[in-house]
Image (cartoon, rainbow, N blue to C red):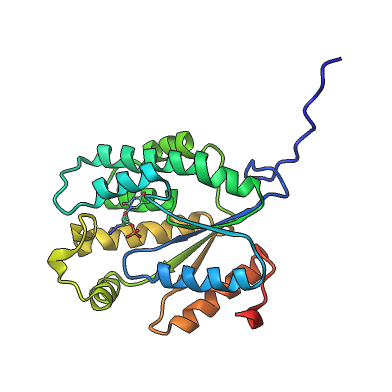
Length: 235
Ligand code: ATM
């Protein structure tokens, strides 16, 4: 008799049970993703979680090269070409980093994922959302985040925070940041619409000037959604 593969129990998102968790962070520029992810990483590591952290575009050698091409201020990138490059970098990350890390049971913290493509290339640049969804299926298969934390900030406030933090001139912004406030408004509204469409997966955290307060909201959302057992006293 032929040997049979053991039956796999699949979670609703198609992933095998007892695997790691995928937590994604989204938001426009200046929403403070990096700071909040640093804090969360520290907290989870203190609690003995095995964490792996990646960013998009990037997270692999190839993805980082694609990132450089995409964000170079002087690059001329047609919008479908841009979409294909983001998805190519994503495919490499999913298959060579995310899937193995999740299979090992790690908590994966990811700075942007496919929602960013819906928000920036879809709502921002006007590429049909269905086309983006189809391409995302090719890049990600059935991989869906366990939780997506959307850090919501007003675009003007966000850009000011970026400029203050980095002491940069606006002219020094990267190619996508330079697309302007109207563009960022559309991206922000797009994110909020995506969050409204999938309230079980998304949590929207309104960013305040107080980093600590914002972090408490992030931790609270993880506790309430029961994505991870988390003890704030160990922060
Ligand atoms: P970060 O600055 O958050 O690393 O993101 C890089 C840029 O890539 C960001 N815009 N700026 N500046 C958002 C943009 N981006 C997209 O336009 N589409 C995508 O799918 C992703 C992952 C990022």
